[in-house]
Amino acid sequence: MRWLVLLLAGPACADPTFQPVEVPEHVYSGGWEHFVGGGIAATDCNGDGLPELVAAGGTEPMILLANGGDMAFTAAPFPQITDATGVYALDLDADGAQDLVVLRVGPDVTLRGDGACGFAVHDFGLPEQDAWTTAFSATWEGDDRPTLAFGHYVDRSDPDGPFEACDTNLLLRPEGEGYAATILDPGFCALSILFSDEDRDGTATLRLSNDRHYYVRGGAEQMWSLDAGRFLGAEDGFDGPSIWGMGIASRDITGDGRPDLVLTSMGDQLTMLSTATGHAMAPFDIGSFAQRPHLGSDGRPSTGWHAAWGDVDNDGDADLFIAKGNVDQMPTMAMEDPNNLLLNEGGRFREVSVAAGVASLHRSRGAALADLDGDGRLDLAVVNRRAPLEVWRNTSAAGSFLSVTLEQAGGNRDAVGAWVELRSATGEQVQELSVGGGHAGGSVGPLHFGIGTAPSAEVRVIWPDGTIADWQAVAPGRLHIRR
Image (cartoon, rainbow, N blue to C red; front, side, top):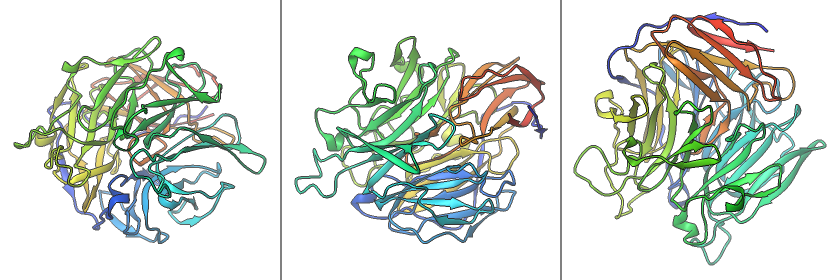
């Protein structure tokens, strides 16, 4: 196993601060079919260590923003794709270059990357589907090609819709040179899905977060078992709530080694803490439910979209960003609905987005928390509906960090499904490497850990096949772990 260590950061200090960055204008536009969606992926498509940004545009073309360093972004050549709702980045063919899965109102598109930020349409053996796709996730069940899941919203062909007209969802598993399709029925208008080994038993399940606005009644959050080939129910210990589900954020924040959840919605942003048998609602006074605007006089409930865990001040506790914004003109929901940046202070959360400078009042949708300038601090990019994309540079006096990238032989080159465990003087942390969740956008790694003032740390990897690596002492910085 080879280890590469680079780049140090300074000690932790005051509350986080961000500065706006000027980028080429890009707007997520469109009518009813683009009230939802608006995903973005931060992905290093040329291997220089600086992530590019790829964003859906709705009725406007998608955009690729090339990263020139020092937060300088320029529009780069990209296939002309409209009606895109979201985009996820992962290496589908194990060639070392990031590919893209583009979700659309209409046939989805997959793009093969060339390792130099060039992308071309390539089907990867996937069957064509024509639906309103709003969610995506991927996992590997073996050493070959990925298992893919696509979440669909309203069935546009249903003459009795849109209410009570949710489309079914699709699971694709490798078979021969192509894929075998399993229809996940019933569908309840999925807006976020995520493969995750939530109970740490070595097998991922597929969580689906669904929008009750259109399923109306009889639906709920869902969990699909790959082993059993069916939805799990109360008899299996899963009893999903019925919410206006829009996004999923997954990370262990309690220290028990299992991922906790935030499920965004209209109203409460549900925080679900892991238990020995599943998840239970967190105490409301934890401070992360973010049910109403924290800025201005609009007291109506908030509308949450993309949620992301990330240690923005590198103190060892995962903080929470939530993109907020009215669907369009829903009169029962807040119209001025600022984004949340919730600072994790030992398991309780404090709103800091106004002081940090990221409390945008646009109708935000997808977002990305990623180190865009390579300085060890997580920056922020947010797609807005009918308003320009916003990017902020993290200028916080942050602590030290570890950024972990994994690589292995075989089809699952990026080791999706691995767990990285870390221990330092700041405490113990664990993260799962997954792709999916959020709202309509995401990418594979790297995994970012804040370690505060700790001068060093120990890390180990539990690889997707269950192999447990030895603990290794490392200095703060960037790690590329290969096996």
